[in-house]
Length: 335
Image 1 (tube, rainbow, N blue to C red):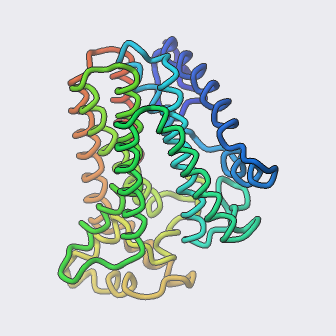
Image 2 (cartoon, one colour):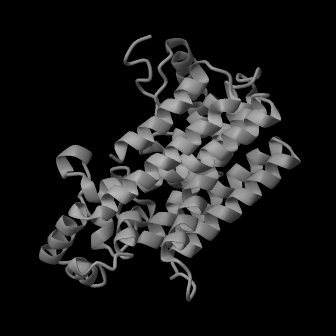
Image 3 (cartoon, rainbow, N blue to C red):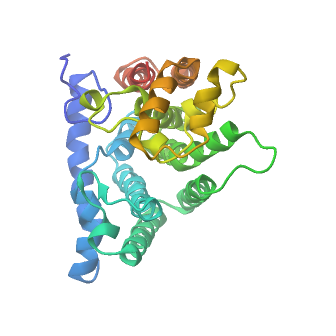
């Protein structure tokens, strides 16, 4: 084993042989993806290739490949197809996200809506969703059902993100539903597809599906914490972006539950407009010092441990170690 065995992979894979297999299989996936985004005209191909060419970690297809290693058929063509399905679905959702967020940049490049317009971005997202559906049909009727259910949850999560909680509903529970739908659902399906088309047992498939749901949501929640806690030099991202834009995330929602009179100033700031630099800086400083940050970290760590416990269904070995290591990364990056 070497410390850099997982170099080039979006997951921490400590075993050299496993890492080498995954890198080789990811090359096959990348080549297949490049073919799947081709349309009938050069313009459609260019627009559909835009975000894929900009890079990305390819975490979801890699999880498919890793989960497939839990079964005897990790090298099957169906595993590669499933990896392409989840990545195309993810890419499609990014085109729509950028329109909803009015984003100008994605992965360091101009977003599709900025380079062309919203109509093109929406339709290209639809094109990629259609491509993922075509591929899913090659995997059989049960895969079509799973993909449809995943797509329903993903879109419902996006819808819920745009609306306030129902009267009397817990804002935190509402937000956790958003995260589970937008992020957890597709990561759960990635692990499920890998196990299923890799030939793993039903028990392992169920365990990996639940693992993907939990660790995927926890990864997004750890991003919430990093958005508040990290400096630009550390993360490469402007701190407090969600705070400035008024996006309610885990630390903010936990802070809003406070009834401590000492938090009156913070609660007042969180209820107001933080687009200005001075008020934003004050709110960010107060939030960083608030107990809600430790509460948020503890929540993410607990979820990561819950995900690791599910891996008891897998035999000891490099695959289980890699999945455990990823859960540890989710926990550590939030602390």
